[in-house]
Length: 344
Image 1 (cartoon, rainbow, N blue to C red):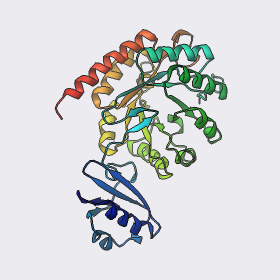
Image 2 (cartoon, rainbow, N blue to C red; image 1 turned 30 degrees about the vertical axis):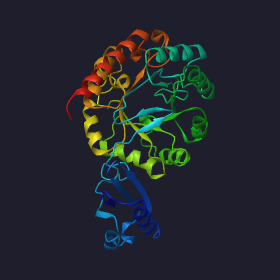
Image 3 (cartoon, rainbow, N blue to C red; image 1 turned 60 degrees about the vertical axis):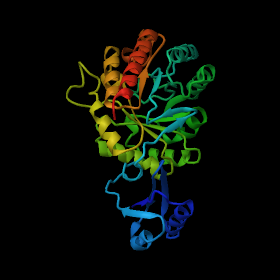
Image 4 (spheres, rainbow, N blue to C red; image 1 turned 90 degrees about the vertical axis):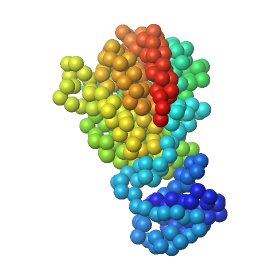
C-alpha cells in the first residue's frame, strides 16, 4: 500500500500516520522529495482500515502496489535513489565508472592496475577475491589475501572498492574489507544468500551491487533485489551484464541487454549500471557497448581492466589496458555530457 501525503504536510501528520500503521504490526518506509512524501506500507494490509488512514490530516490518497517487487518499485519509491559509496554518488545525474581486474592475482597486479584506474579518472575499483568459475580447475581467487591486496590498493588510491560474495560463509569477511558487496550473476537466485546479505548489511546500509542472472527475466531480477530490500537494506545498484541466447559462443560471450536499461529505469528508482566486458566477452566490443549503454540511460559502467591483460589469469580477453580504459572513459564522458544537454 502507498499513502501519498499532501504537499503542505507537516512532520506531525507524517508521524501520526506512521504510528497508526506500526501499531497494527506493519512496517513503514518513507520516501521524501522536494515536494513529495510517500509512505509505503509493508505487510498484511488487510490489518489496516483504509478509510481511517485516509481521514488522517495530511493524507492525500491511498493506493495498492500492483508490482510483486514492492520496495524497489517506482510505485513504492517514485524518486530516483542515489547510493552513496564513501562520497561517490551512484544514480540520478551521477554517472560513475568502476574498473579493475576480474580477479585479484597478486599484490603487484592489484596495485599497478589500481594506479591506472585512478589515473584515467574512474570512480571505484573492482577486484574479485572469491571467483565462482565454471570449471573447478580454473583460478578461484586468493580469498582473504586478495581482499587485503584490494584494500591496500584502495588506501593507496583513495578509490572505494567493489568485490564479490560467493557464499554465506564469506559475507562477514567481505564486509570487513569492501565498500560495495557484489552479488554475481550465478548467485542472483541464491535467495538464502540474498536474505542473509540484506540482514547483515541493514544496520550500516552497505551498498549492494546485484548482477542480473544470464537467463533471468526482468521481473525475476527485480524480485531478487526485493529479497535484499525486504531484509532492511535498499542501497542496491542493479547491474546488467548480458544474457544467454542462441548467439552466445563463437562471436559473443553473452548478448548485451542494453535495451533493458530504460525498462528498469521506468520500473524502479534504483541505479542501473552496465557491464560491457561480460556482455561481449571481447575487449574490442567494450567501447561500443559502453557508449550504447550511456546513451540508453545507464547510471554507470563496470569495466574489466588489467595492467597486463595478456597475462591475466581470468578474463584477459575482455580486459582493457591503460590506454584502452582511458579512451573508453574519455569518450563515454563526452556522451554523458551531450545527453545532459538534451531537453528533458
